[in-house]
Length: 101
Image 1: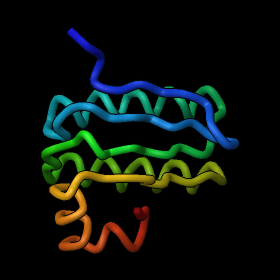
Image 2 (image 1 turned 180 degrees about the horizontal axis):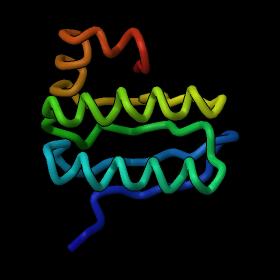
Image 3 (image 1 turned 30 degrees about the vertical axis):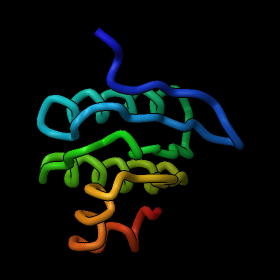
Image 4 (image 1 turned 45 degrees about the vertical axis):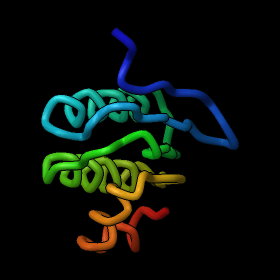
C-alpha cells in the first residue's frame, strides 16, 4: 500500500504532499505527520492537497489545530495547492483566508 503522503524539505520548510481522503483515518495520519515535524523542530509546513478528493469536518479541525500549534511555535501552516473539492470546502468555511491557497 502506498503511503498517504510524502514529505520533503523545500524553501525553508517542509512540503507534505497528501494523497488520501481527509476523513477520520487520513486526518489522523496527517495530524501525526505534522506533529512529528513540529517535534523535529520544523516550523513551516506547506501542504499540497491537490490529490485530496474529500475533506471532512475532522480534516478541517485537524488543519485548524495544526495551524494553531505551528503558530504557537512561531511557525505557520500553508496550503500551496488544493483540489477543486477541497477549495470549495475552504471557501465555504473561509479556511482559505487563514491558510490559503
